[in-house]
Length: 344
Image (cartoon, rainbow, N blue to C red; front, side, top):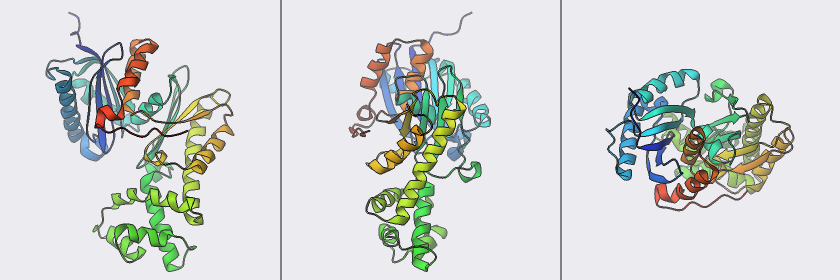
């Protein structure tokens, strides 16, 4: 007896720590439904919590597409690009959980960085770097070989992302305040942001959990603004972040043998949404020193587009299907609010 016939071609999911997007897509690229829900990372919610969040999101997508979520399989291919799929051990935990729900005949699991990469290029290969709360990088060679990183923060040798950059800003501000470091406008900007009289008061409030430590994610725009205004301490932090992007991207390029090719290097995540030409130029110069023909591309599409494109790739869909998908699956469709397209 053959397997049940799915009603649609692709169930595409891009799941992060703070939000998760899902789309139901036909084989010709038509978007039948697109919805946004809360984060679904098993690292933050636990496996049961993550599956509960994904179950609710799939049900919402089915509701928007006029399908019964209990009639499974829903899709021929389910593509799940999820934050927290950092190690093979994570894949081994989540793959049977997702496949066991029967949402699709075939299941593809990837770290969410792969969605950013595929969404930002017309090719099936290249390098993607995400700098959001943390940072990660993934690369795919033309033949399909992959380069991944553990992306476990300082434990795996990483530096960067909104959280570490925010913590570093508080540290630089306190060092200026207590005389251990050079003067910086962050000494004024950080306590002003939190409505406190001093940097030490901010440190104490975070340490005693009167301020959630995740609020340091609010500080990177202050760091970039201070750097643009000529603050040396802030500029050092911004420069270090740029250099870490270069280090990850060029490591992937070398590992995949792409230095003599013209890979697209896709930049995604909140850190890249601002306009800082010097920051981007430092990244571009560092990458092209290793791969002279590499092309830097800032992601404009929602990453769930990349998850859906991975599904179309698996089905062997023609280019016009990808174009139809990109035209329809937009930030505005997911949120009701248009997003400004980044330049460069």
